[in-house]
Image (cartoon, rainbow, N blue to C red):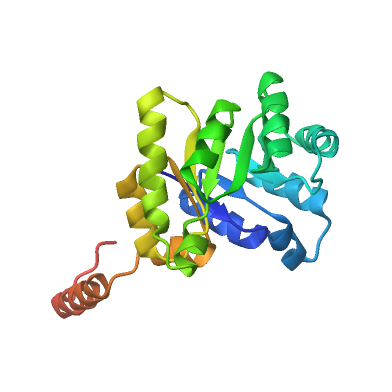
Length: 217
């Protein structure tokens, strides 16, 4: 499973990229607002740091506006992916960009039927929001399972990008469900390496090694 980081914080992106854990980046208007910076400048900087896909979301709600904004964003860098809302106009725009060879990420998916439409429109990625479904006491991971089954049934190439990931357990469950990608907050990605027994074992190893009085170098 590929790991995308869900942030517009360039320092977090650089850190994770240096660890070799990053396959791409997703942003949205809320994340850009938190950065307090110019939208296009942030996207351009991220694209210089990360070689993989970087999702940049349109603000328009109508087809013509999405096309105009998306084509403008696509010129920022070759690895920009145009992020579109899962609406009829968004799906129409998705078809437009797919025909031009521009990658797309159709976002705010909450139902398998929506994902089916995005795949038929040729989306590169579909972003089901598992955490927001969980907030409504609906099993978000069940949606990933449903989409995986539908896509496999018909050979759709659209990649399932599990979004609204809240925890390490979400990452594990998304991987088990067959998500192609998970877009994850920086803290959750780093937390995947944590385990109390790992810490305990390393502490014991360090004490035992110190007792030998030896040095590797």
